[in-house]
Image (tube, rainbow, N blue to C red; front, side, top):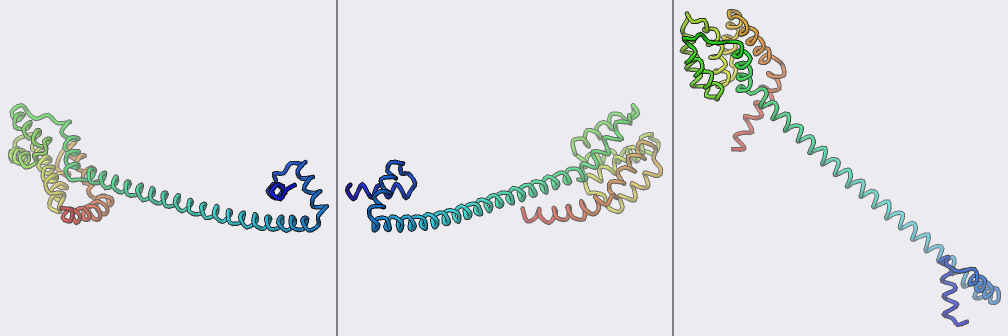
Length: 230
């Protein structure tokens, strides 16, 4: 058997792919030649050490890849959490800006009371103009119309006109101290549904959530951010 064929037997033996017939042939050669047998054993030991080193290196690489994969996943999770938090903050911001805005509070209170009141026939035309202006958010024009009706002390709609005047002022300027005093006064002297509507509106404005979070935190933050954006 030539040297190349013997080397192929040894190689197949070392990698564990030798057939039973070839293995018997190799063992016979080793038994017949002690020097050759020693070389095969040394090659086998060297191959075993190399395989062990390769396996250790492979495990280290797999561990490194696993660590990097976990870092990437962790980074993605943090990014998703950050995006979710930003989305939540923006959603709360938009909800507060809509729900507690002076225009929304005024419109909500206006609708709740207005649907329970019908103006007398003699005042119906100008009253409807005021309603139309208010609903179109033309609060300045609506204010003038309702103020003219509120000055008529003989009209049965005086309280309703005063209520709408205060709502126009709320939509235009917000609830300052003088406005709150006038609204509290109207609450004491007006009939239902104005009394109930005014009490409900004042309850919202006096609530800790509105005063502390909306006007104290959100509104101040909004007013400080807008000039920077502009």
